Length: 88
Image (cartoon, rainbow, N blue to C red; front, side, top):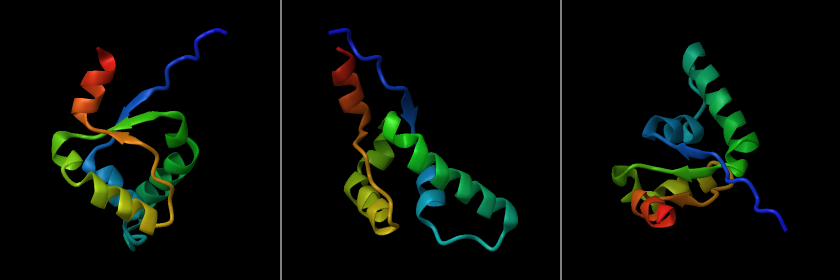
């Protein structure tokens, strides 16, 4: 059986998670960023390997809970240490 191609590796910065979980902004530009972020999360994120910074990883359980409470699935999000171990 041929090996499956690796999923794209995507770094999630903190503002991405904020755009995903915040109430829709009254500012038109911010609201467009939020809509694009939500669409990406629903359609693209499931096909990616996601990771976050060390700073965000310290709050990963809270981050995933916030994402779930906003009504979105929370796929596996790796920490930098996990990424390093997987690359060995």
